[in-house]
Amino acid sequence: MRQHIISIKEFEKKDIDALLDRAEAIDQGDYDPKALEDKILGVLFFEPSTRTRMSFEAAMARLGGASIDMGGVEASSVVKGETLADTIRVVSGYADAIVLRHPREGAAQLASEFASVPVLNAGDGAGQHPSQTLIDLYTIRQAMPLEGIDVGLLGDLRYGRTAHSLAYALTQYDVTIHTLAPEGLEMPPNVVEELRERGVEIVVHDEIGEFTRALDVMYVTRIQRERFPDSASYYAVASSYRVTPELLAEARERMIVLHPLPRVDEIDPRVDALPHAKYFQQARNGVPIRMALLLEVMG
Amino acid sequence: MKDEPRVLQISPIRNGTVIDHITAGEALNVLKILGITGTTDECLSIATNVASEKSGRKDVVKISDRELCTEEVDRIALIAPQATINIIRDYLVCEKMGVEIPRVLLGVVRCPNRGCISNTNEPIKSRFEVTKRGLHCLYCDWYLKDDIPGHII
Ligand SMILES: [Zn+2]
Image 1: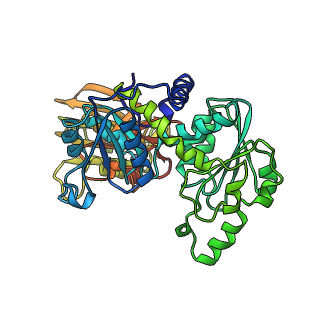
Image 2: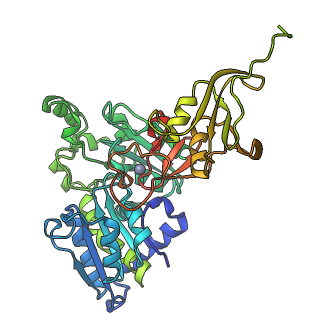
């Protein structure tokens, strides 16, 4: 049993595989719906993320447990200036585990230092979001083995930390990582360096057709408009990083397209009907993965 | 030149700390790190660009009636890794230590990431792991590589 779930970097390959196996069993109905009957999950969301929150609450409910939350941030003691450390100490007294979403990077690490119950990181700022990465890996594994594949990361690779986390996790497998990012939004050099040190091959692309043809998995992230000086330069970039049925006509047959959602313009809605599109499946996988994580810390 | 009379550039101190072999030009940064400014009342002697057999040129700082603690020594290590620290009691060197960059720096450096939880009023100290890629924030995962002296708290 694990105390906290803070960063995907703390998982070894065998831990990841075991969690994915457990989620798969859960998906097939193999779980005790009363496993967490006497447990309470403290849901602390300091910034809105409706889907992540709902999937944690759904996971808890499917295991027979209850969730409590602090209401809107506006109504809570946060506006009165209470520190996160104090909030965590207080909620530790009410709940058997805490799931935390917070706008500041490192918040989950801090919480784990003050909590007397396990902390699950549901995203801290632009930081870690380990359950998302496990969902990504699980969705890939449903389509193909995690070994010997080519995974492409497309979009904002500078600030898009879900892409970084996925890349870190993939270094545990025999995978080639391909990247394609607009100028200025490339993956930070220290991330690339660390990934290469972990033994993964990284191929940097500058042309979307060539990129698409090389892949088994295309992981698309949102390009944020506020990263660009004006909307004209945003649209110029966004249109050249748009996934369309025409583009996917060149892709390998088994290639799947993932996106952590919500999407804006990165994926043409016409792609939804193609067999490549797995992003809604990916969203649905949030529940079994989070059930596996809740069992891991409270089961 | 051999017979040129040796000039005593800094007189010995009775009690306190001598920081020797500071990287030439870093003496004032060392003082800044120690929180010593023109308005604090330590009795100081500073020598810069002193000829040194070991490193060509060095800076030396002597502080009377103050013994440095480990955390202060850690800070000095970040900007003057060659420095040596001598604690003086009654004109004698009682303790001689080299500075050594520790594996983890606690409360020494401010995280460059403005979104980092360590830059808020939470009851924690900043925490960095010293790696070959730079200082690695153990809260937010960022690396601090450039201008480390400018980030010392
Ligand atoms: Zn930080």
